[in-house]
Amino acid sequence: MPVPKLRPLDLVAGEWQGRRAVYARDYEGLLESPVLLPLPVFLVALLLDGRREIIEVQGEYARLTGGTILPRGDLDRIIQDLDAHHLLETPRLAQRRRDVEQAYRAAPHRAPAHAGVSYPADPAALAATLEGFLSAAAIGRPGGDGDPAPARRPRGLLAPHIDFLRGGPTYGRAYGAVGEIPAGTCAVVVGVAHAGPPAPYVLTTKGYATPGRVIEVDRPLLDAVASRYPFDAMTHEAVHRTEHSIEFQVLFLDHLAGGRPLTILPVLCSSFEPLCGRASPSQLGEVESFIAALRDAIAEAERPVIVVGGVDLSHVGPRFGDAEAVGPTLAAAARADDLAALDRAVAGDAEGFWQTVMADGNRRRVCGLSAIYTVLRLLTPTRGHLLAYNQGEDPAGGMVGFAAAVFGEVRADDGACAGSDG
Figure 1 (spheres, rainbow, N blue to C red):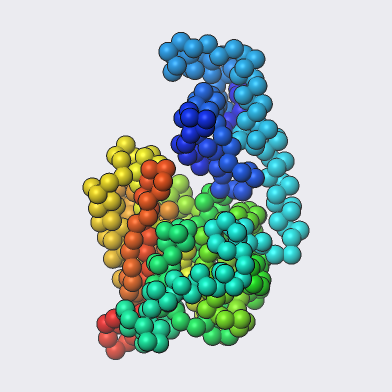
Figure 2: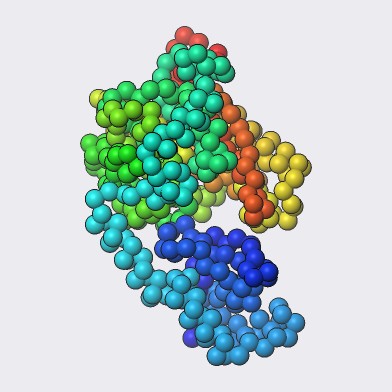
């Protein structure tokens, strides 16, 4: 029978006891910690494609290692160990997924998955951290320097979802332009489903807990979308459990709300590329009907609504599969591509943004492609203002682009918008 298949993982090069190794991480949150794979084990794992027979794996291993024989017993033990760590698509992994999903559905809310690791778990320390980013940016804040305050409160914004260590100042630029959030506001937070569930959009009924309080889901808005959307956006809701792209936005939104009533509609986007390639996502019924349903629900909401995209841009370098090492040349090329795409985004041109990124098949791996497209479609007609663009280096040999932008309504008199400097 064919060997089991290695499941999609985030594989990072590293060292163990002075030798090269690979650390396996996952976006589903099924692993309690990264799994260390010595290079021989990693090579075997890569050969487990769900199609090869045992003898074919042994033969390919011998070919790739210059004739090293991998005994059947050793191969069986490696497969059993990989399975025990939930790295293979087997019944054990399927059961692990079911257990995680059941636990999430039974929980009263979504726990702050990255508290104490990516940001302080203490509410006071977290508030000081976030206020530090906002104060440093000083956009539209009393007595601050930098860009002028928006003439009107933005309808939407793009903020990073990279870690605060690298992206903190850019988060500050994005959320500094929002200012205080009025009581009763609903934030539609569109993030990236890094786990890649087989659905373009994934909703959840669970409120997002911060170290200070739980920000509940706006049930009237959720119900209004669900009643209009002919597909099921809840089947894979457990992917919200560990996804950081929304969690980090909720921290800032809660901070700006200052304890006032605030609700959210968390929306995770999978990649549309496997479904439509370079063609417009508007041809996809599951995408178009969701955007229409959410637009209608927002239009009918009798309370302030802001649309937030928690997104990053290009991912380049050996860490992400490029042959070229991270350096000034690669950084400049990625920056130029990101800014070209952002030029269409701040013009409010969702289709132009999509086509700009997909002109080369998204070779820069813009992970926020589908989410940004969704935000722009939800805000149409709109124009925006790019507040900041930055790049952060990955210690494993990569570079990630990210930005801050705000969007407002197109005014009938001159076409300017909130968040624009004219």
